[in-house]
Image (cartoon, rainbow, N blue to C red; front, side, top):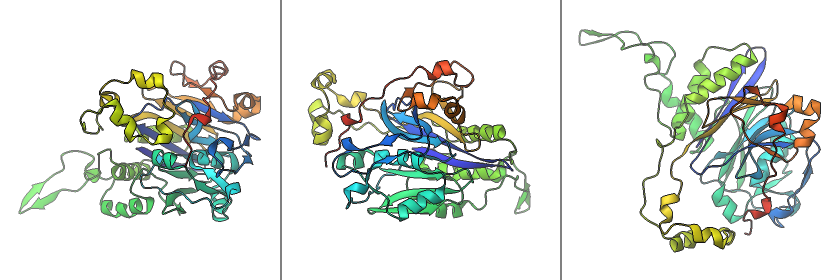
Length: 389
């Protein structure tokens, strides 16, 4: 469950915001790549032979301490992220030299392109064929919003084994159903307005409003993807125009507040107990073979007692396409910290941070300092992921 949207700043440019919801703790950190980094996929399997040299540096968020990009913005102001879309079916790779694994798709976009038009052209020209192993397909059913510094916005989905590219006129994306359905669903909310409803007379009885906000009395307030899509679209459409990039960033965080999910309010119903043997039997062989015996021995008799079942907003980010800043807030703190990507590139620090993780630091204020950014961590090996078809 995630929400992505875009905001126009008058005569200045654009910012975009994104929330990340998940039940399992992603342990996300800032992740960096420099321009000129050489990307290879030897560990993805023989199908995935596509390699490239990045044109742009970027900063983003990773997951599980791995060098996998789940969100980010590059030095050209182009941004993208991974959003959950169950039912996604990736392409069949017919040419291994073009094979790109889905968990490297966001990194390819961020390192390679400056505009949405460039991304569309590359996909339509079949520069890559985007696939995944069976395990990764089941683990990562994804679609992708892409925003550029000119305010263009597209959505990339994989349906029936084909790549689908949609222009996004509202700048919003959540999860399932697929994007065209979400746009069509907006027709159910044409009565929404920022203006209060007038008095109404029922059988001679004049009825007045209960308070301000009646123009939005039918806006959906639940955390489902269709409702969050409507809510984020309405908020970005009706909010007062902003005229500075600071105001744009501030508005984005306010919109993110309207889709925030605290721990505990979204949960799966308990499905009964599950023994260690039942749990391991349900896992794909490629995945179960990676679990160390030591870890298996530490599993409780009832594995269901430790299974994550409650989605919550783990972090939110605001991407400033004009100043190329990346501002984040994590669940445990309301403090916002910012990475200034252009300053890092100008100072040469982006070169030093290439391929490194940096933990979010909630105790400071404003831009992450050089000292904080120097507290780097090596990501785990991508080779630990299951990739056998």
